[in-house]
Structures are given as structure tokens and as C-alpha cells.
Length: 476
Image (tube, rainbow, N blue to C red):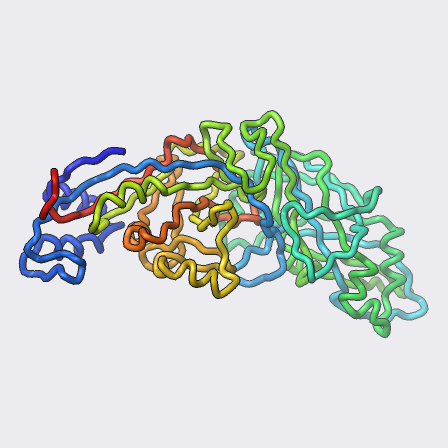
């Protein structure tokens, strides 16, 4: 690791160059270099002289394949992305990726059928949310719809690797044209009202069964629990495809619609895919790829000189900050003026865009995510309170304002760069209770709702610490 002595003047120049990002550091300097200010509250005497240092600390790392990544789309709240995925493509680094959607449906309306009512057809319509990943340009996707043959239960959890049985024969197969460039433009336009849907005319045998079940006086039709035991759901399965696309199951344009007529009047019954069990199964085949051998959950993989992260397949990069603790154990008292954490030379392309933001999730010694589900869990993380946030039970690093720490990506520099200064100051302050292991995980797009990935050289994980310490009794 590198250690360089920096004069106060040089350090002030550095601070000014980062004023927009680190204005609060000037306050620290005011305290440090003002002889009138009492520094006792920092643990220093105001009679002490100070020197500013810089250290580049090695960060050991590995790749982990994590279990139990939820891909469910149960809620339409603003804090959760309502997205299901289907399609497949081949990634030269991560192997082949296939996404399948499994979704229940139930009646949204309860019509009264007359004796003259006759079945006509049934149509599945899925509204794209304009997420697309894979081959650029406009290409053809062949997608099939199957009936689910096992009951999905709300008492169970469904993850990216949850198995579900489906029928042998498809209810429909359709060719869909997907223009990746158009999707990219539309997803970036948050005010757009564009509506683009995929349509499938399902088999009449299935439609007739559904029509025969319509009875507003029968709880087998009106009760969602009973109905989904009878009609277990639909699976959206790619056949020939070079992209993964997203749909919104909460959008009113995503629905199953049954058409019938009474004499000359055409009528319909709508079935919704919202507020039921709906999730994406994401399968990967890494044989022959750079990640060939990453086959066991929670086992450190170091078979490559690169490090990897992928949203939908639950691949993360593990960080080991043990060298930070080793270095700081030699220093009794410091003030960390700036902590700079970066990932450089990040691989990205039009087809394989990187996550725009990463976060750091705390890991246990056994490589599982540290969660807060008991009183003891809360006690275990008490020393680092103030430098972490707890979200959905997971323990994540906090930024200097107390919110979620996000490591943003710059396409100009091909770099992730962030300044978790207070986070590392807190780790130093409570270094008797060490928390060395963290996982780099995607924030945007969120894990489980996309298949974005990133890859970077393991030697390009950089932790730089600028800190101040007293000169008194120091051995130069």
C-alpha cells in the first residue's frame, strides 16, 4: 500500500478541487488549522500539530453467486419496479441468459351471461415497459405461451431460480419485432405515453374452458384463491430470441381478454395479472464462459482476473476490507478527510449496458447477506449505526447524508466512483468490532428486475484514504 506525506497547503488545494462533492471537508480543515478552536471533542489536544496523509489500501475481492434473489412483481408502489422479463441472448462473458415470466391471472369483471352467450376467442396482451437488453437493432423474437400446471402459493417465496412446471404444448406462439433503439429512447423518456404491446391469440380449447367457468354466483370464479387453483397461470417462454424485454403486469394494457357474443353484440371479460403471484425465472449457462466454474452458491470464485456483477442471475462482487483494518490498527486516532472508492476500466457496450449505480451490502462470515430479522441481529450491527441503512431487512452502506450509498457509473471515464467518507470513518471508530465483508450489488436497475451486468479488472478496485493525524509523539 502507498503512503505519502501531504502538506496542509497541498491538501487544501485538493479539497478545493472537489468543493462540489466535499464542501463539508472545509469545515474539518477549519477546526484542524485554527489555533483558536478547541479540538478536544475530536479526541485531540488543541496544542497538537497535525499532518495530512494519503493511503491507497488494497481491497481483496472475489465473485459470489447468491441464492434467494426475488424477481417478484407483487406491488405497484413507487418504491418497487413493477417488471417481468422474458427473452434470451448470449453474453460473451456471462454465457447464455434466458428469462421466463410466470404469472397468475384472475377475473377483473364478473359479467352475467345469458343463455345465448357464445365463446369467440381469448387474447393475451402484454404492455412493454421498454426495458431491453441484448442485441442492438430491430430483430425478431419468437415467444410461446404455456399454461402453468402447478398451483402457485402466496405462502411460498419465488426467486430467480424457482422451478415451475408447465404444459407440454403451447397455448400460442407469436413472432414479435423488437427495436432495441426505439426501446432505449422510450425508456429514457419518462413523460412518454407510448403504448406498445405484444399480443398472443391463445388456443380455443383453453378459451372455451375459461368461458365455461364464468359464473358470478360461483366462488370458484369470483374467489381469487379458488380461481387460481383451477386456472394456475401462464408462462411466457422464449423460443428464438436475442433480447430480454420487460413488461409491466400492473399496467391496464397488460391483460387477458376473453371475447364472446350474445346475438349480434360482441362482449368481453377481462382477466388481470396484477396483485397476484408473478415473477421472472432467469436461467444462465456459463459453460465455456469466463465464469465457468461459478456453480455453487456462496462460494468465493477467483478463477478470473476480472470481477463480475449481474442483476438477474444474482452474481455479486465480494469486497474484503481487512487491509483497511490492518492499516488503521497501526493508527490510534485519525480524522478521515476523504475516502474515495472506485472501480476503473469497466467493460460496457451498447448491447450489454452496466448498472448505473451499485451499493454495498454487508455480508456475514459465511458469505450470506447480513439481515435484521431478530433482536440479536440489531445488536450485532449497533456499533455501525449511522453508517448503514436497513432496507427490506438487508444491511446496506449509507452515504454521508445518511441515505443509501450509491456508487454511480460514468460512461465518459468508464468508472464507478463514490466518496463514502463517513462510512469509513465509522468503521475506524469502531474497529474493535470489525465488519470487513461487503458485496457490491446493483441498485439501478434493481437486482431481480433486469439483467444488466458489469465486469472490471480485480486490480482496478481502488480505496484511497486522505486523513489527518497528530504529529505529537509520532515517529516519522
